[in-house]
Image: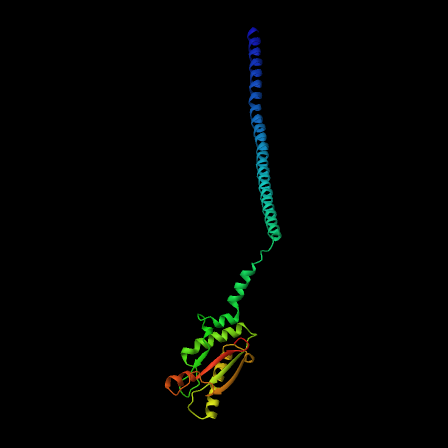
Length: 227
């Protein structure tokens, strides 16, 4: 009987220990799951905070850039307003007179260093074609007339003393017309040019030498009202 009672007590103790140990091991998985759930909940919160911080920084930079641009625009507007308020500096009367003297047509025609001061074109005997050496003179006067449309010229054709009066008048006219034709081809309006022939009646050098004849075979460019 005593053995039966001792065996029953031992069985009760063993059953109690087994129940306690089983309960402890059952609690362990549940704690691990709860810890994992807490970590998973904390991870999205950190990501959201980082994203919010990045967006706030981007907004701050955009606002700063906008303020910088606005300040630059304000300064530019202020500079433009100050420049507009500055008085216009007028040139001195002496400077205006000097400038006028440099661009005055009559002064340019009289300047020996200017090609415009040369106003005679010479020809070979019994010819009215313009020689190559005189082309720059014709071109210079044509350009001058295009730039001064209020000016007029008279081209005077001349001959040496040889030949009849009628022949020389006709040859002188052909020489003057050759100058006019060349200038109109260079863009000068025909209304700015008139032509006339003096034949042999207006010699530049009197005499009957080759030198005198060469000087008298010419066309003279005369600026009407300036000479």
